Amino acid sequence: MNHTPVGVVIATRNRSDSLMRTLRHLRDLPERPEILVVDNASTDDTRLRVTRDFPQVRVLALPVNLGALARTHGVRALRTPYVAFSDDDSWWAPGALDRAARLMDSHPQVGLISARTLVGPTQEPDPLNDVLAASPLGPADGLPGTQVLGFLACACVVRREAYLATGGFHPLLFFGGEETLLAYDLAARGWAVTHCPDVVAHHHPDPSPRAGRPVRLLRNELLTAWLRRPLPHALARTRTLAADARRDPGARQALRQTLTRLPAALRARRPLPPDLERAARTLDEGHR
View 1 (tube, one colour):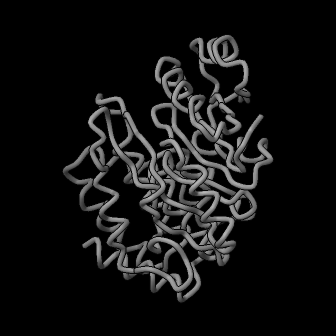
View 2: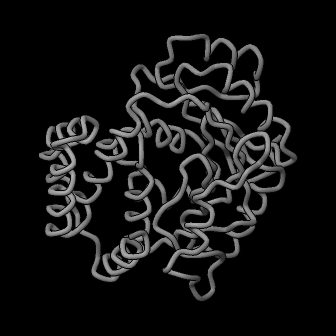
């Protein structure tokens, strides 16, 4: 029996050992959440091991790798009012999901809660924690935590209704830095996005570098600008990446990938409302 209104969705691909560790931690949570693994067309033994070792965990097997869009398939498949995301290398602290549920129950305008993330066996605070806690947007009247327009995807809880109304993670980005665009889209629809440090997640990332991730981060940052920010801002970011591309192969690859996707980005372009654009500019200035 499940005792919490928060379900957990895990998107994974070809990382069965790491996934088994995550599932052990989630299975042992006192909240006993419903857990759904969305398998991004793994070619290893992921589905076999989950079915054999965790019969209480549902598996949604996708025929192709959909990247972050796998999470949206998971949210649709669950029926809990709130959904926590884990990656195959992250899990939630005991009591964190109940805390998130209480916050969302008492603040119905909150669409997403960003958790405080502790990294590795030594539980070092993720540097992003301080960035989010010090957000220049500050606290909002009557809302928990600090207003943000960013978060860590493997350490957030969403209101299912809000997430699905926005369309979830954008398919154009695939993976890497996909969080900002979702935060923009939630806020544009009137949902609050807040960082609540008393909701805690654990992240044990593989120390080896992930191939292609720096390029995807550069590409998706620029695509996000073209999708939601004013044209002068998007053009300026494009000029900066083009200048870097003259000497940096990674920037060159990111620019090529962006230009390939630019027609689709322009078709899906929906600039932020003026008040939200002002908030995004405030964050830009703070980061600089």
